[in-house]
Image (tube, rainbow over all chains, first blue to last red; front, top):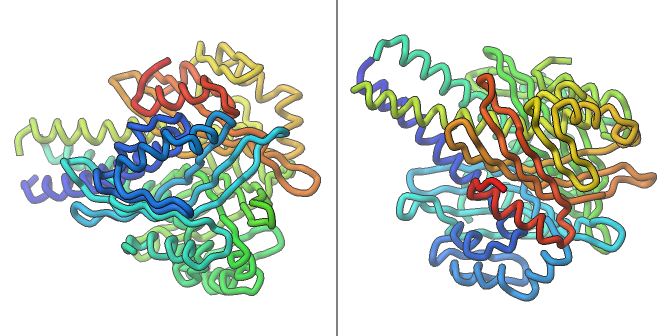
Length: 161
Length: 161
Length: 161
């Protein structure tokens, strides 16, 4: 086989590896944040990466680490919670990518568990220092607001916002 | 390496690409339908594809588009909902495939969110015009009925129904 | 291209296939156990594999099969339930692997469905007879206990426990 054929195989393989690396990062978020693993959660973000979730606007990896360490988050996990994210759909374009998924936040209550929130999540990622990092995550509750729907409809075809 | 070796690599790669394309379609369904993206949701189905869900039997892509546009569905998304599908298990055989996943429907309520339904989802797909399309989706509530269990036990080994 | 280049492609492809085989097994667990497919659920485990879940310690494939056939489990599925597992993160090292995911257990109630439990799941797997098999699964409720958090923080970087 010609080297052209091999190059095409490597391109297809690289695309799968890129998408899978992003899917894995997003699938790691819930376990890490529910474990209270502040540094490891922060590592998913770029140094200057942002996380905009209702009532909280983080503007760096350090802000994400601080969120995990905050009394608010620590209280959540010691009372019992599960940040449950569905399978992400990632669209890669060179060293940039967009991904989207839905999520629910489940919390322990006296008599069981309850769904405290359902959310739409839109991620912009960049390949920096040879690994994918989140540069912007935007999360909105699926409570009827138009912005949550816009995150989903932009994200599936891989559009930034 | 011989061309036989390369052909085997291409076969393995193609299988992963096929399974991933189907997993991605199914992971896109929730975000698209919760966004109210009627055309894009419909594009997941074949022209003559069906969607049989309790109380609603759609028999074409146009029927799926009409469902997303219906007052019932629009009311659901403007009040707040999340069609949350788990990771799909896809089994490909040439240009045909079967996939299965579980799902929950989460709805906004005055004081939070509630799980309105848990479901079993069985998909039959065909490669048509070089892309995978749903030819039949069957969804039943996991409310104790035997049919829901049959969808799951048929789907995991890749059996049609 | 040199055979070295081909060998590297085969290594990358094999890694994806291994991780995907494990992800697929874990994505199959919920559908199989909710279908009551006792033998097929048991096949996910090694002969001597264990499943340690609060209040229940299984020590072999036969124990897992017996759990699915038990009155307790059969009662659960005939009243309606969904063992809903999120996307797994798998880390492979030769013929050993670790995987982790979060999960919720949704149960039918008179007036709808309820989240009965949210859980952390840590899996150790081995490649035995050329297929991946679970040698140890540990599940703990995300109810605030430290052990559940430890399962998650160990599992994401691929550490055994």
